[in-house]
Length: 233
Image (tube, rainbow, N blue to C red):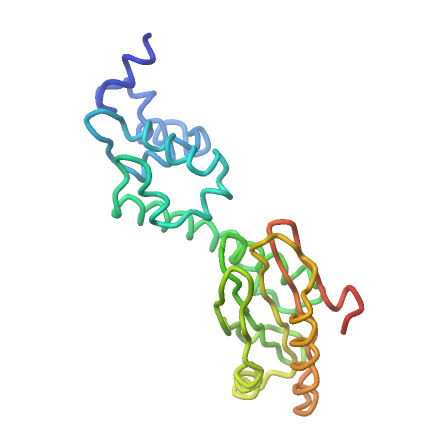
């Protein structure tokens, strides 16, 4: 009953130890629950529900799993009564920052030695996408990353990568090697026939320009698959 009474009051009426902002100031961010952290982003609730209540509803929308929450669209987030477009954008922006922080620094490595060096970045940046995204990473002769580019964004079941676009960018950068990358939103890590055909097509075209296809990496929430590791290159 006491907890129900507290939740019926605005957050500013709660004891300082129960208010998310004050709790963060006194105890640090690590002391806050996911719903309390989300409530700080939401900022204010409605007449009937506090920001913490709304935060709990948003988390439930994502099955109380932050990975699942990260896959929700702005429209999905607005299914929670009290979450309008402005609040939905703030939540989505925070989740995107989390993804970028997770992947930050991986592409700054001086040298790429294994498929795992790239897979960590790809999983962090592409795992929440509901569509296939094809990315190419360009390297110099020392296997240092020069740049990475999104080549295409497709549908739920596939995307089309333009070989000419991939190689034109490689020539412009003076790249001597490339790594092909894309995600499988379905979770299945095995390459499709189309993946196999594209890999060989790019490999053969690149060889004519003395550019090496070092790998083709597929990522999903289940992990990653490397053509090179599997002896497919």
